[in-house]
Image (cartoon, rainbow, N blue to C red; front, side, top):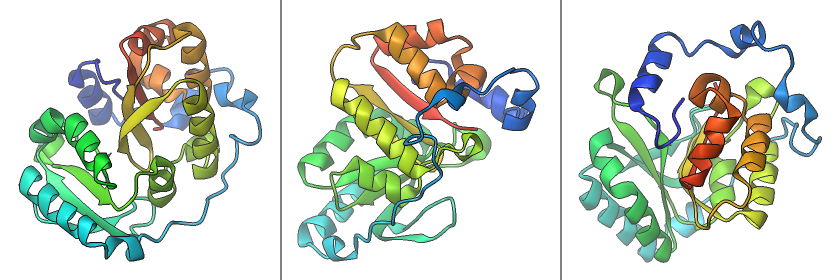
Length: 237
């Protein structure tokens, strides 16, 4: 697992060693931090998948596909949700070398949002095995619709997409953020205003997504330090 400002080497080491599964984590953790979550978050409900087919026919979105293809140096392919490999109707995907996308994703995401479309990373390879990162493009500016389409979840903690969406909406109401990455088991981005209570938010994030501490920065205190830098990252093993 990786918070944006944490070295990639840690992630590679975790992946190569299997990231120690949730079941093995239970042997070293007496309690499940997510057990205290309210029922509206601790739910495996899955909202209906959005259908972007109609919006995808808009000439502006078709133009955006061409622009993204030229910018990323990749041909558009069908976008598929990783959970079930089902096609996300109306979406396209690009395979992009990690080094290239890291340099352009943040600014490019903002530029495409201004055009009414959402450019985001949904699969991060961490440069392992020479695999590309996967970048999605959808005709919407609604990040919660993206979460529903990609079925973002923490299922190993019984937190389904509806729970993830509800938790993130409450976070955004008090601490605005931008998401440049939305996948089936992870999200990444940055806060748009200084974090008001890094320590308190770090604890809440740990209770929502324990793996960012257990298999990431190591302590809630270190997570709070990352939040002061504006970093936002979730990953459920």
